[in-house]
Image 1 (cartoon, rainbow, N blue to C red):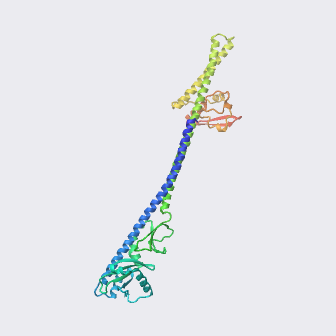
Image 2: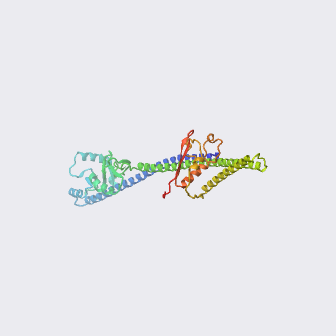
Image 3: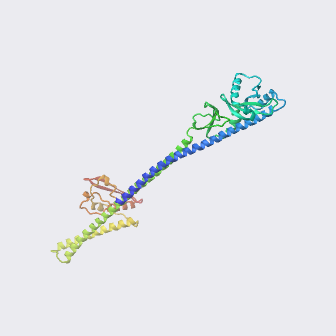
Length: 431
């Protein structure tokens, strides 16, 4: 192979290696970026759902507080009216009403937990809150209460403390809000101890993706997003990365195959060029030898230097044999040229093969070269063919002729054993 061709091959191989490294780095960066992007999308979705849940909680609380305010402003307000309000508003399981002096107006009787709650409430509510009015969420123990000042009641300003029912929250908010939002993803509402408050489906072996916090309405609760096993964003990115990697490896395989095929083609072309060069040299030598003999004996006859009639006839015989040899050589070259151009035709006719076989003796051929001797221009090693004439096209012609008859040719033997060529030619159907 020429140096220029080697350099081209090395350059292509080096470019392929650089491409492989760059593609691997790019794929890794894409994997990290895609995973981050999917994670951000999942967080945005979870935050939107958490905001929707909190909005629903605040709206339900506002509606319940509004109806309680109307009840408290009734001139004929009685505790029984609050009982009726509770029956209509199951979203709240407990409600307390205090006057400005801290007297408990509802419920009529309190227990020890109510006393503890009242003590904590007094520490959270300032006098200014009574004056300004309004409402806010306050953490009382492990629960969040909605605290609001109701102005204008017959008893004066009232402080309402409303506790949400966990069952009502699950039934009226979580089930309604989260219905139809999950798809393949699983959503779970967790309390401050990471205990699931609500899940639409069992989590099972689902993989945790992320957790987002609620706002002031649910300060201790969080919304967790899960994906079924194998469907997390990381798994999805890894599957895509594996697919891209497989495609890239396939591409590299195609490139490697192309390089190998190109290398073999270039090497074969180089070998073919060398064989053609040898063929030209051998043909020139084979043409030159009979021509030299013909010329030498013709000049001898022309100059009348033949001593007797026997020598004269011998010279004529040499000229005839060398002319026939020259003709056969030229015919072989012409036949080969026609085969190369696809113009060779055969006139099939019965004949005797014995005379042809007796005319030839070939030499022992090493097994490693037995498949190559039928290639055009190919001749086996120099030591075996030293001093023997030939151009490397004879066996190529034999193979072409046999295949034209629908047959095949095989060779057996080895160095020192001689060679046995077998021509397998099918008989005509009418024989």
